[in-house]
Length: 594
Image (tube, rainbow, N blue to C red):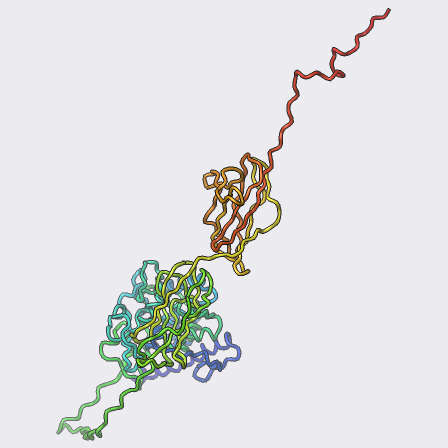
């Protein structure tokens, strides 16, 4: 027993030192001016480094997590280093199950393409995966990345944890009363409903699949245009996942550890964590059955209280217990601002219309009110984009949560129109409550241009039967700015007064080489410019018009000149009179000498 306690004490001292060393290393290398206290906590004086995140606005609902810290030994020890208990543990901890590691790296690659400015390292996903589920319980996943058994956190019933009532009717966690964090990255259902991704391409968004969960975690950490190579943004992102300073320090410790080196191990052979944040004095344990074996806490090691000795056994009896003093019922908990909201009202939002690719000038405003119509401040309003659209809020997300101000109004972030045109909706609702919300109709219109000009001034000419050497180049603008991706139609018309398609003169060629005189489906580039395909001329000489029109009504007419083909010199007529100077018949005859 003494040896066991000694090992535990040594382990506790080592892990505390690891936390301090890892956070100090990150501070020194990434955050000039930051300081670290004697417990390894990072202090920067930046009040924004720990956002005030409500439980149901975090990825995990601030659920319990594993607090095990990495070993002091390097994850990539020198080959000459001897094998000992510490070295064996370091090697075991540095190993990441093959499928889990592959999921992290694929998520990093996807985010590098979709959100390059985020600079997400896969080691951060590995650090969070270690803290949340012990790398999917040591990599116990199927070939497609789905956990062999579901990984569930305790029910968030307010008993030692956050209070989050059921939001998914048990679809993800099987619990119709309270939410539970789900899967290897421990998303609560209300967050997964908008943050979920399909990472393995099977057409499903499954929080129990490591590929789906890792990609979702990457997108979650990269929202709000955070750059994770910046220490401040890195801390904000981690704290938004689980709003705890100890959680932040634990994740940073594993991030630093994995950055020093790791290796692939077979699925199902990973080291399992032991210590969990809710297995501590002062934290009410979960009710039986609410903490499933998929996410076990460390055994508390407590023993049952000794029973009073039986009379005559010689052992002292327990002292008689004093009856507890009478207690009065505790006062009822006062309602929170969210509890007082009866409905939401539009707060004067104007028409929500924008051109594809542009930012909406109008922003959605919603007011939270009591049944009597009184404004309610400090209420979280969740705005969700609904429908077939690629329009997003700032940061590329389809959901944004904003707290109402003193007048009860929450203003959503600006909408950024995508390329899909048409109507869809944004639904405003109270986070954590089922009360009457407000739907907002949003419309994205096609890209347009209000001006179209030709690039270059060189005359466009060719000879009949030839081809034009110079291409036709134009530029579209809208409000004086380049109008990219605007639809353009090019048509060779009969005349300025007759828009009918000409049946002679210059022409384009289709894919089969046949002459065509109208082109549709053309679009300007990002700079608003467009170069038309090569033009050819038939045998008709003259001046012709090419008319270009854009969505939005901009028009440009370009003059094309076809010159007659050169006339060849005629062959000499044999019947014509010969030049007398060369005609032998005109030569004077010799006169014979007398």
